[in-house]
Each structure stands twice: as structure tokens, then as C-alpha cells.
Image (cartoon, helix red, strand yellow):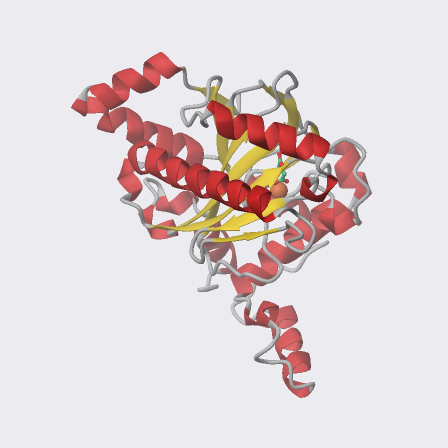
Length: 310
Ligand code: SIN
Ligand code: FE
């Protein structure tokens, strides 16, 4: 079973008794082992007025029918066309996303207490688009099983933790997940994918090209570490390998309306098949803060490569 479900009562009990630490460490270890932590009722409820605005706005205003991102470090909202959207609506959406981001971080500082906030609060997003049948290029498709990697923002080994909330009033958000990280890596490398190397050949070539055309400073993706290079290639290779997509072992989950879930998406292969209206907050977590540091993908890959990759 790769989903661990936690009820509101269980959560309250653990938070209430100071002796919750042992249980909280176990939940961290569960997450690090590649399971999805599922809250049938979200522990981060959003104010009813905010919920109403999000659902009403995206139904009636096509300009808000996009993926909206909130960048907490700059307190910036993107994905909204500021020229055509009423300033009032943009301000309101900005405030809603700011509140959502802060409340998820507040919850996770308690739920992930063993990490002691050794993370960077990354972007939050609002996903109002129906996921079923989206017309996207292969590499951008989220209905193909994949592990996450950021093309322009290398994490240098920091982990990608995502906290989701299905705010659709009646419909589930339908996911599939795949096999454990080490197993998936073993499926592709070596063979379809080079094993990660301390001075990754591809990263090297990329750097060379960028420098020779004078883009060294302008193209941040060339600053990828060998770790990031491998993770990016893994993401692309998984999505582009149709035989793998058809034959790989997969488990299906339907996340209920009003539920939340969190998962390390750079290691757990996942895809969203259907669903609409979700909120999400990303954290980049220091792999050294793990309860089981040996489970971090950078540790798994460095062991395979027999060398440092970041
Ligand atoms: C993804 O990270 O691949 C998409 C997940 C979702 O939006 O439910
Ligand atoms: Fe993803």
C-alpha cells in the first residue's frame, strides 16, 4: 500500500500530546520511503470565502483559466493577465494565494517538525484547468508517469515536496503512482539513460555550448549539477518511453473533494489523469534534514555512481 491515510482525529491526538514526536518521525520516514501521505479531510482548510472566489472566478472569468503561480519569496503572483483582468480580482487572488501559502507552511512546520524548517518555501499554484484531455507537448504532459525535475531551476539535491488540496466541490482528483525510485532508475540506467556521472557528459556538453554562444550567464539550466542533469533526463525519458508508459506497474488513487495529500514528487513516479481545481504548495527540502537521509535521491544516485553528484 503506497498511501498512508491520516484522519483528523489521529492528527489532533498527535499534535495535542507532546509525545507526538515518535509518530511524527514515523510519518516523515513514511514520506521519505516514497509513500503518499493522505488526509481525507484537509488539515489546511481554506476560508469559505476564498474557496468561493477561487471556484467562481475560474468558472466565469476565462482570464483566470490558467495555471496560477504564487512566489512567496517575492510575494508575486504570475499566470494572470494583469492587462485585462480587473485589478480588484488580481489583488484578491493574490491575497488568497498568500494566505494559502502561509497556512500550508504553518501546518508543515508542525507536521514535519523533525525537519526544523530546513526547507525553502517554493512556489504555490492554483490549477483550475481540467486535467483530462489537456493538449500539451509530451514533456509538459502530467498524465504520463514521471518524476518531477525543474528545467530552469536546478535543486542541487534538495528534495521536491508537494502538498496538494483538491478544492473541487464534488469530483475526485485521479492519480496513478509507479514503482519505487531506485527500481525505476534501474529500469532506465544504464542502457536507456547514462548512469549519473560526477562530471556528467551531457551537463558538460551543455555548458560548453552555452559558453561558446555567450549564454553561460543567461541560461540557468546549464548550471545544473550532474544530479540535476540526471533527474531532468529521467523525467524526459520516462514521459517519452511509450513502452514504459504502457507496461509499467501502477497504482491508482482518487483523492476526494476536500482532501489533501503530500508526496516527494522528484522520487515518486506520478501522473494526474483527471480532476479540476487544485491548490498546491511546493517545498524544497534539505536532503540532510531527512529522518532517513540515505533514502534521498541524491544519496541513492551517489551510491550508484560512487561519487559526489552535487
Ligand atoms: C504533477 O505534478 O505532475 C501534477 C499533479 C497534479 O496537478 O495533481
Ligand atoms: Fe509532476
